[in-house]
Image (cartoon, rainbow, N blue to C red; front, side):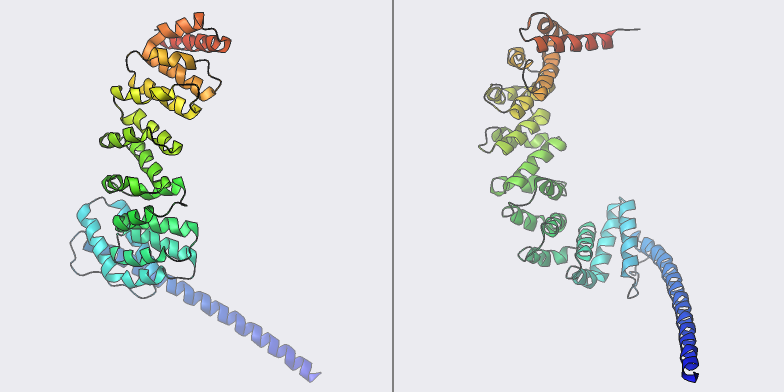
Length: 340
């Protein structure tokens, strides 16, 4: 009986001890977090003074607080657009956090590595470019490969372009995100013929998105490319950056045997640029079986021929649906032109 009571007493003591330990640990962690927060606020002030030039000495980093430093660096670089301030931040990261990021990109957890890649890109940490480039020759997940290439675009574009000549399995959207990190597409344009298909498509997409008229010649040359995806992207780019005389590049695609996408893009060009004598090319498509082509045809017809051409289609076109669509569109346009 005594040993049972002794055992119960021991359990009670252990439970009380465990409870005391948990309370002490909780208080310890709370104190540590309080100290970390105080340190973070002081670091924030020192970082601001250093970035703005009010303080010459670089703020010191307490070991274990690198995550707080990273948060403050992200916040500051996102809030300031001043070139001199950002340059001082980049210098600080290279001087104080280079070993930390070397360690992070080798971390066994992929989320830690991916976060490090994004930080490296934002802080322009160029000294890690070679190591990142070497990682691409190891066995990596497609997600990690994509992020590394995007990171290289930010810190070493020549290495990213070198990879873009080899990486054919990257998705189109992954390539757009990568090339899109470049403010200037000149280097990509110079290497265009050697790039894999996703990157070529991405460049043509960005020419369209950014309205890069200075690269219109590239889009013109690719409207006859053997690769249909490249051809379509080039045609789309020219709908925004092309000139009136470029419409002759579209006439081969205003034929029945071409794809509906190419027909639609050709009609979109006519809508945006409205060249003379283009109505005859548009009329055959107002009765197209493709909704996209029909819609583009009516938009182009209105832009190039005006309400008069819509009225003629509504009156005389042999296709019943085309007549109905023209009548509806004419009524809509006339309603918009009524002055109340």
